[in-house]
Image (cartoon, rainbow, N blue to C red; front, side, top):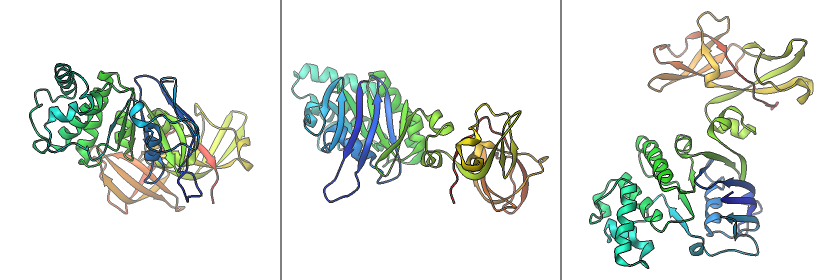
Length: 355
């Protein structure tokens, strides 16, 4: 691994619980990783530890096979050859774009500086803007300048801490796709922090979900969504609910008894012996629930959110069980209306029953 974080612990003085606890993950050269989770989960602390800005209590950080962080050995941030991009851009308002970008390569001869500045500005789509000033640029353009400045010294690793949080929602996702293209074109290895799932999915090759200082899962977006390792990951990623279910082993295979009826013939299904009496909670995603007028199972619409091509319906069965469903937006039903639904699952994700 190009970046290898092993059993990492970060403690703050006066706090009983570790800010980061036993974190393990890695990035291959050229990969983009994303840390995601709710506020206060430790993702920025972990990023700062990789940067050398937070002391490591236990574990290790290796960068390009070199130990850069550990309890007994910590390379200074400036010696790690890391480029950082922050949410506030941190551009110098009194310096031109060209001089902002050249800030980290001032030791190079003037001609080499100018060549490298032109290269990275071309890379971020701002060629020819050397003489402009930050206040003359849009928020998205300022963020590109910050990215160009971080790339200019050819860092071993790029770290980006919620770089789009000051931008509007539509621009954030678009810029995430663009930044991914820029980082890939530069051949950069990068670690990115965000609380926004769409940003994470847009930019990351691999994504880590954090909660209360613990890295629950480090995987690609598809695996996080369809095969979550923990109940927290299942709940945090995407739209879904947990419903009580019972697994039963029959001669023909495992049958899953759910509030929506019996499910069988899935490609993947846990064995009933995993849970006492086969009783568990099943994860039902919004895209697992299909609107079907012919279905015997009826649910009442208690809330609806228009998403353009679809509605996100919040539904309630007669039993009181709540479900979520993505329904094409031409099926415009009123709140309070009862509609037919059925479950359509390729595989089953279950967890231990919660009260």
